[in-house]
Length: 91
Image 1 (cartoon, rainbow, N blue to C red):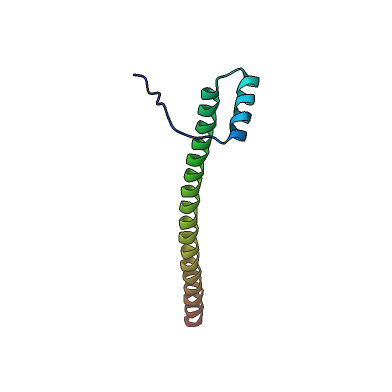
Image 2 (cartoon, rainbow, N blue to C red):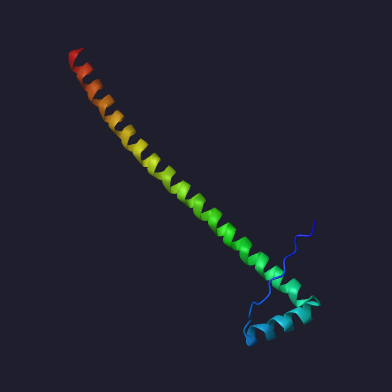
């Protein structure tokens, strides 16, 4: 099944079109191929950015959980010390 879509009616600024035409000519590809490559790269970068953003959000949540656990660990260490001190006094 052919999945190619034709996007009609999109306007390109003259200076951008000249550059597009020159690059396509120098690469010996069609303007359509060059536009597809550029859009594919742009869209790929967008999704990569979204994926990284979500990963950083998950890391931030994990860092917050680690900070809470460190706080709990600190409290437990203090309690352990205090208990040991009382046990030493009664022995």
